[in-house]
Amino acid sequence: MRWLARWFTVLALACMAGPAFAALNVFATVREWGALVRELGGDKVNVYVATSPLQDPHHVEAKPSLIARARNADLVVATGAELEIGWLPLVLQQAGNPKVQPGKAAYFEAAPYVPMLEKPTRLDRAEGDVHPFGNPHIQTDPRTFARVAGPLTARLAELDPANAAYYRERGKAFLDRWNAAIARWEREAAPLKDVSVIVQHKGFPYLTEWLGMKEVAALEPKPGIEPTTAHLSDVLATVQRQPVKMVIRAAYQSDRA
Image 1 (cartoon, one colour):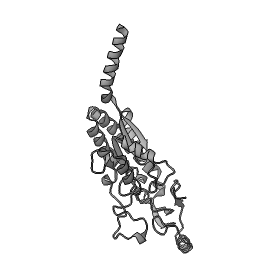
Image 2 (cartoon, rainbow, N blue to C red):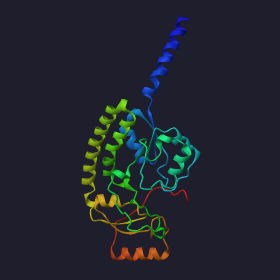
Image 3 (cartoon, rainbow, N blue to C red):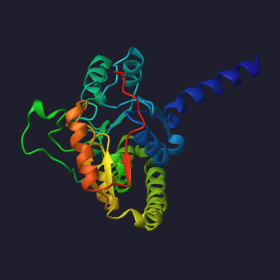
Image 4 (spheres, rainbow, N blue to C red):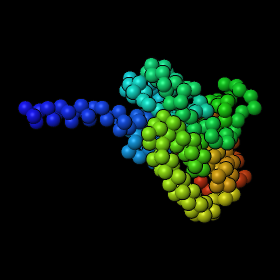
């Protein structure tokens, strides 16, 4: 029976030690933030991403599976600036997890750490899907991740102080690699400076501003509004006056399709 007593002793010690080694459960709204959390958190985090690369992050169904994940989350990482306004507030409300509600330490938004572009001068739904805090598609500029990495590292350390040094070490290593990569990408992308482009959706101002490209027209007349024949004729006339090199479009498929 001694072996049984030893087994129970080991089991008890394992149960006592369990919480100290438990990874943080992180609920990320989009793939980019999920990837960043994995870089910063390593094996100290379990990351769940609420959307697939082919989903429009504006239009996501608040499914029970998302609610269940938010209910068990230790941290929610979102873009903010109303990118997820159509579904994330409902998911968090239905989850009933008090620690990940907006304003709490376990709720993190990236947008407040980024200089926002295209802030509207007036709010009018007739102008389409207008975002009062600016264009929320901040992930198309890699410098965004350098700006967000520091505050997100600090938030992980705050929520998991036992592993704070680990997060800070990984955060510094990530920034060193990322900033070097940005410098390389900027050298490689130098020929794109002053290139004229058309965008399918008003979702690329951070990309064009970073690379110095010129957006001359958008296929959508207003954000989220399908183009009319008349608008497309205007775009064609613009292109005839000012030739473009490419059309930039998002790869995702709308859930409304």
